[in-house]
Image 1 (cartoon, rainbow, N blue to C red):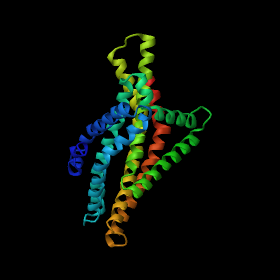
Image 2 (image 1 turned 60 degrees about the vertical axis):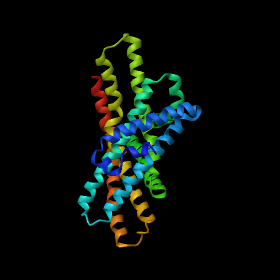
Image 3 (image 1 turned 180 degrees about the vertical axis):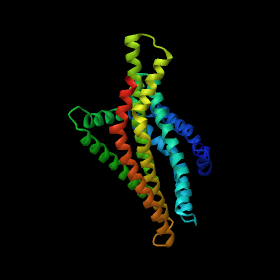
Image 4 (image 1 turned 45 degrees about the vertical axis):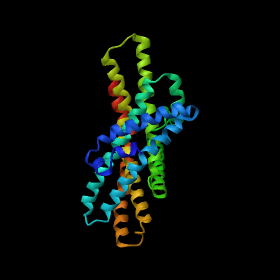
Length: 288
């Protein structure tokens, strides 16, 4: 109850950047509790504890957005209002992601093996499926797009069935991306230290920038698409729970949610395009 009382939906939407620190705090507390109490299963328990801490605020925010849907606000204003909630969700996700990345770099290897075991298995599996010189660019784009669409559908389904069920999938993705960023930074720092000895602050800054840029360019629109889809599913779920089904209010909610789902679909396509065609260019320019 202490963690969930730190921020309310109205304050969250007015000051979305505070959600970054909240996400970092939630994840850090979950990380150390899981390592202390459930060491062997820490990689998944950490995700569950972070999700549990986030649920009250996410649920109340979605309820707040559903109330806006049944108001007399025009559609353009509604989308602008939803943008405030999405901004808050995104900062929360970034906080969780950077918390995982930070602790991946900072903690000893033994602790990392417990905390990010399942996440690293997932990263290895993804890399083995979507990388390699033999894969054509269009095939790679198609594979990434269909994988992202699958996650998008899960976000919609989980949000509709469980109200805020998408937060578990998004927290899981945050832990995977955080582990990937942390692993990239840790590996590059180790390489610099091994070959060059003690490196300058500028070298470490370059490594950290590379680790972030490798995932942030396409990661932000991709995760934003999942949040948009999760918000749409959650709004419909709450409307059904409140027995608005079949009323004129429900028709308005359905129209608004349909626009959000369409927006999420375009965002996920845009993110896949960035991942395949834009991110590699930035990485290549980074080393030149």
